[in-house]
Length: 368
Image (cartoon, rainbow, N blue to C red; front, side):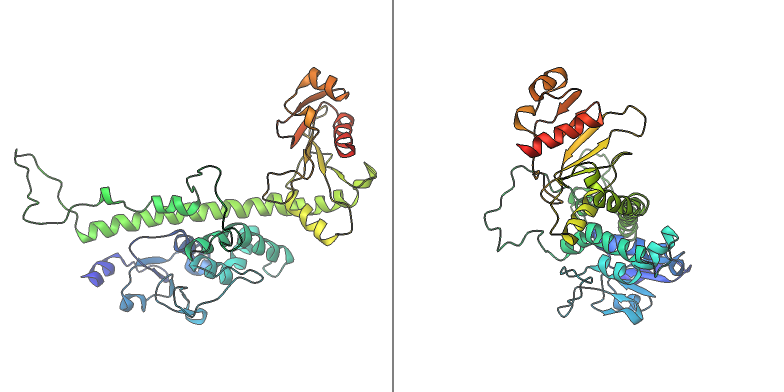
């Protein structure tokens, strides 16, 4: 019966991709979408089954089958002997990571029109894995973001409800209250008062609905991936050159080397700054970054404290404590600096009407 149902779902256009039916996850949802971005798989058909006979007819199989054999397009990670990781990373791959490992560069090259062998494609390949795909691999393999051995007493300060891409995909699965009751003598076509009961769905209907939900999940994962790729290609990557220039020329604005200025507005600077500081470990670390709120003449200026690490809310040195939560003329009086606009209550960012005022706010905060 299972083979008959699955066979009815097969289509004849393009190479056939196989994955498992039943409860689906973010990793195979993304894996299928990534494959379908490539010319080889566009168009392609999809079958969701655990039937080995049907899977053997597939051109490519992901997240099922118990085999990782790239030469025959088998990309499962559930077998006990599987230990493959992305280069220079330690997280065991899921089906998403496996497909990305083998096909990520051609997908990036196709989307960006960059040569596949270019260093830019390699950089984007590594960046997207570290910032997007790796979390999916870890989640599917049951790997915690923190090492339990080194954080035995770690507790959340608040409940974030675990809202992640993985949880959003999980929400698309059918839940117990949506499942039709099975046929039984007690499950008659009508109730005692004569009203009709909902008829149980056929296996074909249930599978068709499940497949539709999977395709919705696949689209969610894939379009999110493409948005991230477009951002890194169009914003993050071009910013790299600018951040390098600003970093190496920062002393023309302040001799301490602890203040960095973006004269034309903020760019995605954090990743690139931390990388530069690692490469130039003997140099003083940057404490504040200055930039105008917009490109127009007369724009107000921001002074932002650099955080201790990429994912931290803690600043290396927050703006002066007595300025925090104060605004406008009152802040002018407290600070002794003209043109002040505000300082955030945590001290991680502040504003001034002029570049000189913002620079003075940064310098006085460093000197304290």
